[in-house]
Image 1 (cartoon, rainbow, N blue to C red):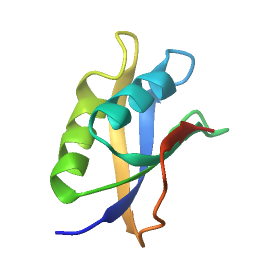
Image 2 (image 1 turned 90 degrees about the vertical axis):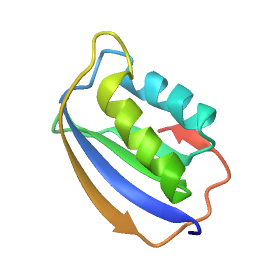
Image 3 (image 1 turned 120 degrees about the horizontal axis):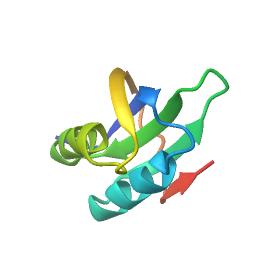
Length: 91
């Protein structure tokens, strides 16, 4: 399967706990490209682009090990058309 792009809204204790930096490290490890940013409602928005198996691993890891203090309560995932990001960055 080719390139997939997902928009992931992360609910829980995910701001002020290093979640974006942890997400960046996981993305780089799995060669996922895209962005991660805090939203004003306390959630975090991730745009993640990669192949299907890398994205599955990425979703599992952001749920279980982004940082010791983060607690992910829920993920809303929506598929987007590929954008062809060159790297993964914190916004």
